[in-house]
Image 1 (cartoon, rainbow, N blue to C red):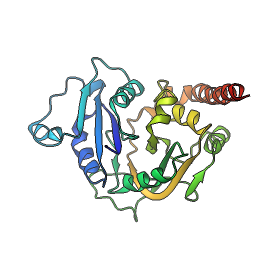
Image 2: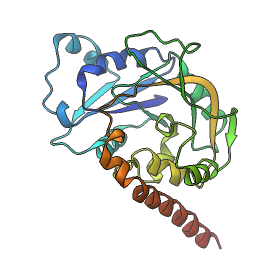
Image 3: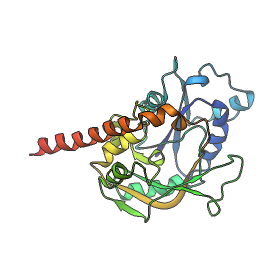
Image 4: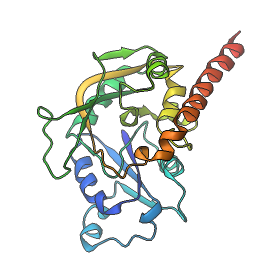
Length: 253
């Protein structure tokens, strides 16, 4: 059985060839559910794409009928997946060779956890070969091991910042689906499902470089609208997590 399904909601299909090469460097059985959205709808692949990564039987490519947004697009990819673990990789990001296999090994041992993640580093130039020793760390956790349920959410509620890169979590698929998949509100795509699941289940941090994250001016999180709506969306996210805990407690009483 395939171990991991990588999910990518893509608006820049010209980057997918490089991402495919990054997935090829992972030492595990995988499938890649690619869902085209936005400017990628109607994309005509080049000969290099047709003769390269698009011929890989592990790649499952689908196109939205019209622009549907990041959350919906990811959920359409999630619906097509069947592996027990899923990891979303944005079309402009990459992975360190072999990093996901390390997370998978931990996840198989820590089955009570909703998922596992490793270190995320900043990537300033996708064309530069990965060098974890020289990279600038973007997100990590102070020490490896189990993080009790509610810990990260409580910290986020106080500081407004995540100490970990929630978008780089190797999810146990059951848990991601159970909380409704990816969020549909702005600034909620990764945080909404994570805060809900983490309120109920622990997670695990493994101190290995896994994810290479590209920050650029065109990101939606940099826009004025995203910044303006931040507090409202976060309030809704925490309300949902609190209600989940409350309803489950009532059921168990």
